Amino acid sequence: MLIAPSILSADFGNLARDVKAICDAGCDLVHVDVMDGHFVPNMTIGPVVAEAVAKAASKPLDVHLMVQNNNFFVDLFAPLKPEYISFHIESEVHANRLAQKIRTLGIKPAVVLNPHTPVEDIEYLLEYLDMVLLMSVNPGFGGQKFIPNVLEKAMRLKELILKRNPDCKIEIDGGVSDKNIEQVKNAGVDIAVAGSYVFKHPQGVKAAIDSLRV
Image 1: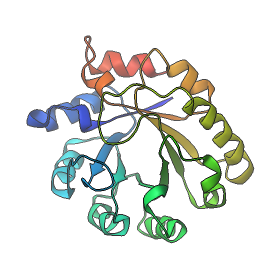
Image 2: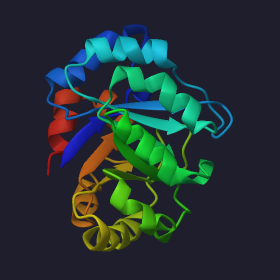
Image 3: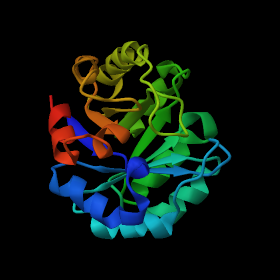
């Protein structure tokens, strides 16, 4: 299981310290949640703060766009050269075109599905993607409770991936902890995003990351 701590739950007054801590603790990706206050009822960070995160990080960035104008935000964050840029299928009319644009920028394209969105909506997009991110909470805020039926959804997505693009990874985001990580892995998920669980773990970020490494 690859681990991508979400900096949404970090201490923004000590952001560089927290980013360095998760990288030193062995995370695989640094998950950056970008919210515009329109697609979701919250606002987070722009490219200036993300640039500071990139400078502090020794691991690649995983940029998750929760926005309405995806094309605009891709142009903003592409200069940081993250490993992935993911956008919500619910907010993008020209998903195939945008995925191909992200790839031409030298970045791995990914699509995000909200909890209610069926995986069949992206069946004919899978061959153009490197990752699909399944939201296991409703997007917009950290610290929410895991939605269990997303595990069934992950298994269905895995079937489609094996059929269409076996190299495409599955990522899950929301309410992930040591209590459900085994189920997450057994459902076919490759990458786990965890925010509050990692940054608020009583034994520190390394203990949290190690506990998810199943």
